Length: 297
Image 1 (cartoon, rainbow, N blue to C red):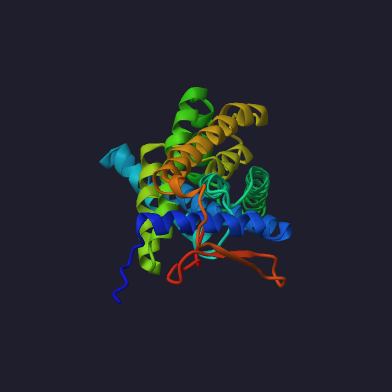
Image 2 (image 1 turned 90 degrees about the horizontal axis):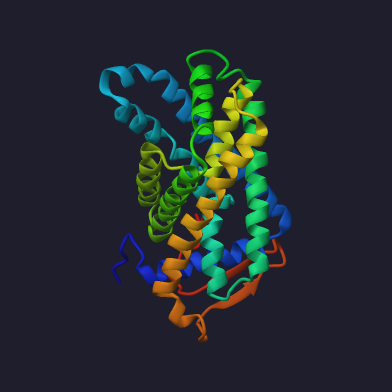
């Protein structure tokens, strides 16, 4: 039997739903640690973006702002690659995954709330740890052009209108969750990486917003002296982008593909069997023998 490098739509959405079961049923301490790690790993990509963006500013004058933004965007996806390939819990990915599994009636709305809450604040803790200990005190961005570039990025976002950030948040997580969809659909490592890279490159280059990425880049600029208060950051950046991310990932990807490929089977019995492991507390759901549950976001 010939095995293609890509799964079909139905197998992919079923695997996303099964991943939601795994995430909902894992031990709470594992959930916390994985969420913390996701914040750290995504921050590696954010640090790469700030470093390359600051160091390549002459390209803005010589080749135009679009080339400069494309170069910055091209290095950021490494953060999401690390998150997906290590099984860390990223809040923005969970907005899609838990919506699918909950609408599929494999997890509950309480599972969804717990997963979203723990992953959001765990991601925040990971970003704070990384930017304070491994960047600020390590002095990686303390000197120009890195300091001024980081400060300017935070101040520019602080002056964007609330509704604009909200709408950019929708577009941002729509593309992030499509990247996770492509990574789930792909079977080979190189295909997963390419599937993640292209949508993330697009979302960063065009200026869409991602709440967890901002937890590093914007907060880093604030630590380095940006004229942006914590209150303004929370009310005018973090909240609108987070709400937009929930709609972009939860509705435009999670709900939409559940409706297209799983809604007709949600009320009927399925072949899904569930077994528990007393060793690690995970619940593993198996739909087909050829579905690979490894490397899920």
